[in-house]
Length: 136
Image (tube, one colour):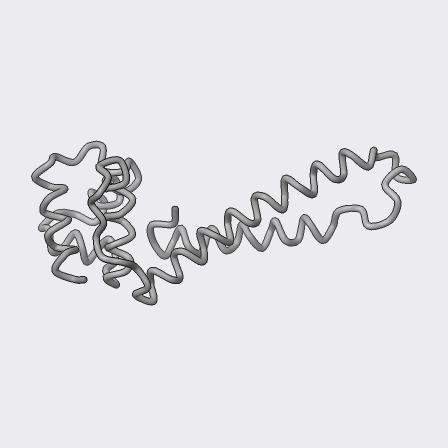
């Protein structure tokens, strides 16, 4: 999941590299180059799969940034960390802006999100949810 603009730029660059790698796969008969066709197909399939995953992440982040997210869904405690991140992005808040509203440093929000709020107290998670709920 893409959490911020930096990760967005990195993911877009990775997707471009995978596209370029796909374009460079042997187009002519692979046996003439000493490569088994199954190996070429496996490599192509792996690159396609990774590219598709990156594109899905990019599309989700862009949709959320445009405000295309639903409200904060708290029906599953397991999904709560990802939903907090999605809600922040959909609310148009950067990690820095959320940190300011909470009264902590941006790096702490980055750590919370990088670890899916594993180190955050329940009180902190509720505080973030309240702030993001007011944005929706």
